Image 1 (cartoon, helix red, strand yellow):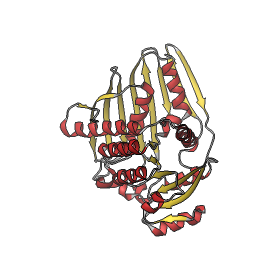
Image 2 (tube, one colour):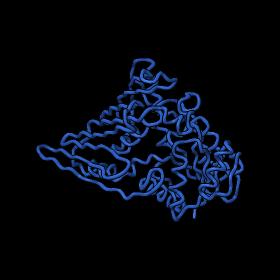
Image 3 (tube, rainbow, N blue to C red):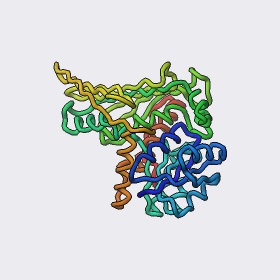
Image 4 (cartoon, rainbow, N blue to C red):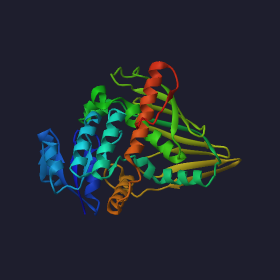
Length: 344
């Protein structure tokens, strides 16, 4: 049984994580931490969690906690994660893990020194559709991949204010807008599907829709080691809650996917004159991430028990944020920017 503490309740996913983790037989949520004592008491009462801490250090230092889930503003995540690692706790940090990639390097160093597991929930990797697409690529069903296309457009940014996470719209705390918060999903997914690193990035960001201090629209090109190119369209400008699309183009065929969080996901494979439509159902599970998050945590628990690295490492989170930073730099300079390793 893994005893879990959750740090940070002013996040759109905090309550969803509590619900999800309480449904897992291998997990017990034993404590919550947040400086907002009113919200802390409210969540504790709602979910029957007795250990409530206005000071996160009390939760981190408690012997009853094995693993912490950090859902703080991005700029505050590195300090909390380093503190947890040094206390011997395994750590899950909600993506993108930090406001800047240097913060993830600090976490990685602390985790390695303490020999604890550090990961981030890029849950799209765990969707049945994404895993099916991965197998198609590896079995050469569409030939060599030459291009990706990804659209991740969310509803208006006011949802963060309404959900008690207004810090998401403040650059000092969030690090950036939808590219920083949502674009990392497709960056990580494409990197995993292809099994290659991103070498160069170019893009343009602006805040023309909502005139925020963060960007609300971003378009970018990513160039992989083998020459494949990904184009991504990321923004907070959807009329509805979400507008999502993924396409993988190979030399022999094309895979198109309109992702859904709930219900059946449809994957279309076009090869030559043939067309196949695959419907992939997911078991419904209450809580953030549903069945995808169940798979994430079950895999993480196995990795911890076996002394292995988790399927998604902190380095994966680092590479995604490095690509985002390269896109921001490209938008400033008007040039392609190298996505360097950045580790001495």
